[in-house]
Figure (cartoon, rainbow, N blue to C red):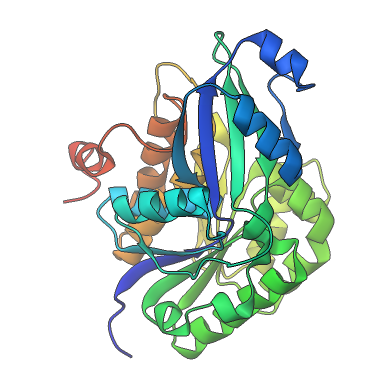
Length: 333
């Protein structure tokens, strides 16, 4: 088996985050629920985008955020996700490559426009999100670059993209190729609502060995096993998963394997500003350590540090150099 050229290849929704300041009146005039997240169609997306004030446009999406986090930590990351051949598709591609992530998924020449999350930040710091999934949902098996999958130590799959049937097939194709190359496959459960919709399918992915490493938070874990008791859910996960990572916000995080459970506390922060991207960056930190062969405790600490840093700012892209921060904390050389 040849040495991997990538540490992690992430596969997920390719979304452009568009952040702009707005007054409460703007939200009311467009029928938005302040602080909420709404799925919108293409016509609504165009209308809101046209009415928004000057904003910042960056590549986003859960798995894409993880890939960028890994690159920021000095890792070798790639991403597979679908955009349309349009203005925002060009923004996505340029931005994620500029962040140091390998990205070469061909843009769609027809169909829905590039996915976008229109984020309005009111003077009180509250974020109201309007998401159009568009072309991101059109990922198929033909978009899976098998050579890229074979080149990655870990292929990381985003649960949010488990909705479209063709994307499911793309995930299964990637997992098969990865295992044939003796690589590992990771899955993030993404959201408790994803788990509610696809509980049986996620169980099958774990039981069948399609997934080697599971990422979830406490809420998603409880949803997976339909229990309100954390310890009960954790015990079941120990029996089912080869390896798993469970995050619990201020209560820290755990790594589960055949050797047992390893726990670390949360990274200390002075003030939580915005929890967007906390799980994405935790995965980035953990996978960076994991692919470098660090001990589970160090991987967890690295994930906690990355998550702790991201919740102290607005947005899911670190404003501070995470590699420098990891070195300051003695987590990476």
